[in-house]
Length: 189
Image (cartoon, rainbow, N blue to C red; front, top):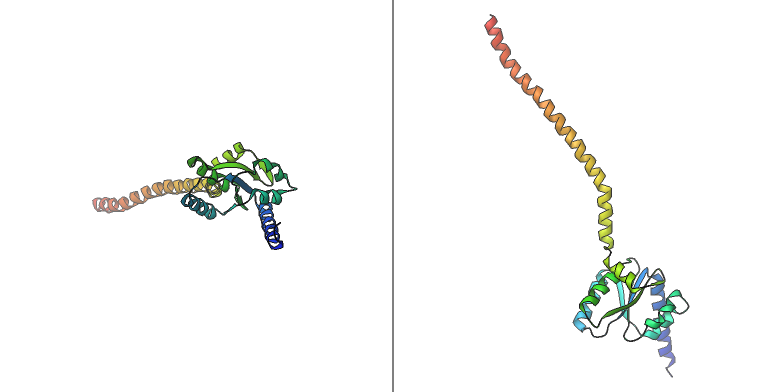
């Protein structure tokens, strides 16, 4: 029988995990067996830079953390070596990074995932992995908003340039006209 101290530590881990899962907009559960320490370090670094929390956890602790929620249906996926990646802001970061990593490592695989507290299929995780990142989407939106303004600015500049060309021609004619006028005056005298 575990000591009271060990039980309290496990309860604290479950409570923290439950809070983290509830605060997450998206999460992915993976089977991490067979990856090297070097690969694991690179993966953790990439996830951390994307704002994704990645933790190796015992299946029992994850089961207890999701007990009584819609995520408890993923119980059948909680076997073997398990790690959980959650993001509190980005819906695609965990799926994108972990799916890409799984493609290059035969033993590493995505088990399941969730979005907004609902379990999603592996096909949905693959679709999420193919979506552009949040930064790319924001760049596209900014471009769409800026494009009409840029077109308008180019149109105004074209009008100004066209008027500028027309304004230069009379100035040249007036510059030549005074030179001819004195010649005509001298001939008239």
